[in-house]
Length: 564
Image 1 (cartoon, helix red, strand yellow):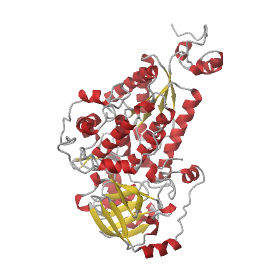
Image 2 (cartoon, helix red, strand yellow):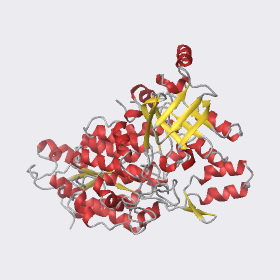
Image 3 (cartoon, one colour):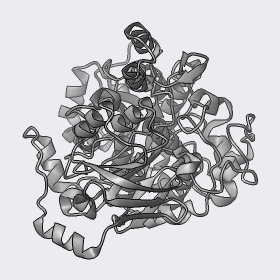
Image 4 (spheres, one colour):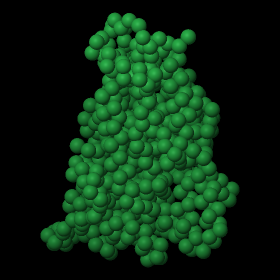
């Protein structure tokens, strides 16, 4: 028999306070217009935030994931209601105006979830996402709303295979350089394009998307062992169903997101980020989530302090040959946490209802020690990320030692200055960059960009032109998690706000010293004073709309570049 849509409404039996009593009658009636029954409306009302789109490969499988989440919610005695948000793909946005919207989209997604959940008064939510800005945005929303929440990702993509090795889709950008240098012809270039992205999932390397999915698990917001399950694995759907069941339990227990995302959880997340050499973008995302969790400012000094204590235990593609499938097979996040346990807070809670320490007791050590090392035998005593300071970045900037060739740890070179990414790419492809140069890409910060776009293409075309191990790149913009080489981003203050990066001229000498955490412009103070007197910020043209708001309200990259 179908569930009744009529009958007595005493009001008290509804779990959700918005639906109780006479005041809830209109709301119940509106829900009933879509087929929700009285029996369903008496249950915990769970939002399923499904960011499915067939425009973003990391989100292409989320309808199937959502179906399993909904079934899990129903099985556990909850009622699921679905809504979506925008979910732009950084890979499709890169290299044109769209990339200026990518980071800014994080605040739009967070706000859209906040608005819908507040408007409907949901009891809990399951957040479905996979990609670069969507994952941190959803975690920001969970922290801001502070209701029971679980994050479920769509899983990593399997890698492409080309000439006997695995690649992520960014092989296409490198192939542009190969084609330019005559190493491949147009037909081979097209073949690479056709095989580069073999199926759905977040890109097959330890870039921002997979880094943030990993950190969601470390923060305790995903079911243990779930972050690195491949997109095409049947286990991905099992995780979804289990997450649906568990969110109802969290609602009944009243275990909200801020109890999970504690100071101890953020300590653990920073340590894992450093131990695995994750994306540099994760720094600002953790800062933004930390703020939303009511924990205040998360300074770069904390990343700097821990980077001197946490060794590199897992070097992953693009910093090594090991991709996300290798990482999953080696034990994934749980195996790294197990190895790193003496440096972590075991009392931190997870959405499973267990503490980290309880989970580690049953977690096996890595079955592939070549992928995940033990604490006593690290890949490097230096962490995978580091914070540099100096006259060029008094507020700090970020470098990824895990992706830097060893001979470039100390680099002294002459500046070649560009006021836009497009200008830099054209110059590199024209063959007008000399080995030993420090490419300075400025006016690409949160306000100067505006939007702090990724400087993805300059690094990739340097690689394709055979210059990635002979040139450094520094910027007040960001980098992609897929980049490798000596790249320094998030320079703060940015050029638009009068940071010293705005005063660099072609030919100036710049020192980069990772071991000493130094970034210095070697120019006399008197010369810089004269340049500052003549300085005016570069004003870029961009469409009227959300970027105006973002430029006016965005915090510094040193504080997470979120709207304030």
